[in-house]
Length: 102
Image (cartoon, rainbow, N blue to C red; front, side, top):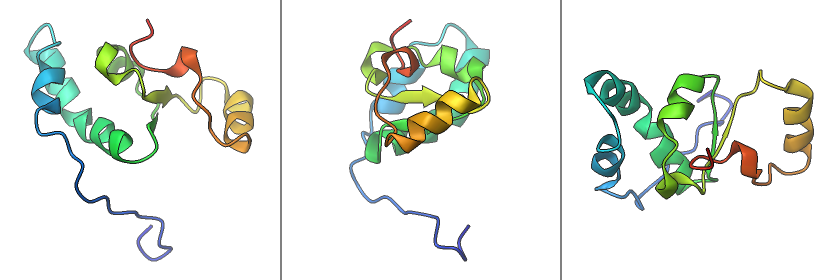
């Protein structure tokens, strides 16, 4: 990925209190640990294009927080044809894929 220049380094704009606010929504240590490993995905999405593409439906369920409702979380294997069309259309926000909507 580095050789093909597919990596983009983001600078600044990180919300220092975001991780703590997210982790406060967890119900137990197991959930906190699961969320902690994916907080960097959330932070990157908030600094970039507000999109997370991940097959991890458990993590998606944990991040159903109103504060994160601007983020679109897409599972690429849930409906591959629909996802491809969504990408062709420029990846617009889709309410049913946004966090905090359930």
